[in-house]
Length: 145
Image (cartoon, rainbow, N blue to C red; front, side):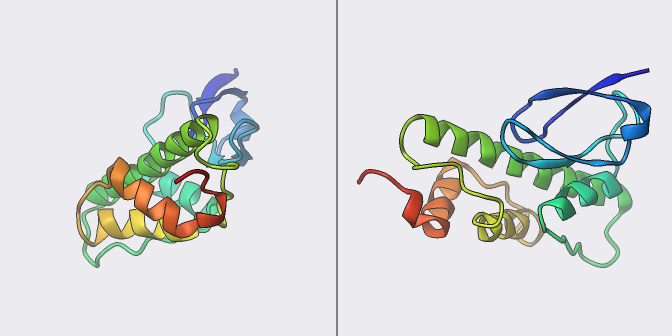
């Protein structure tokens, strides 16, 4: 029985089959990599979030003794913030503020800052943070003043 899954970064919907569970997929719309959950509507686990982040080349080291429920929440927040970042980037490309969508490799330092902000500082980044970090990470893509 097939079920719907969505890209965490842009929301593009896909139809998956049970045998796709746990597989890494690349979104054909935005290029983000994500892991297909094991069932439709299943709450993602810390392992699922870690696999999604690993597909982006991000390894998150949580403090020793982190409660498993807290770990799942932190990893979910990181995945969601990276998704928010990609939505902002797509908006900036569409508005002509960036020459093209940066690659995940170009965004590695931004991803690391998101992780640091959430894990070390316990603060959710905002659009001003994203803007500053993007202009530092990919100045060659910035258009305008």
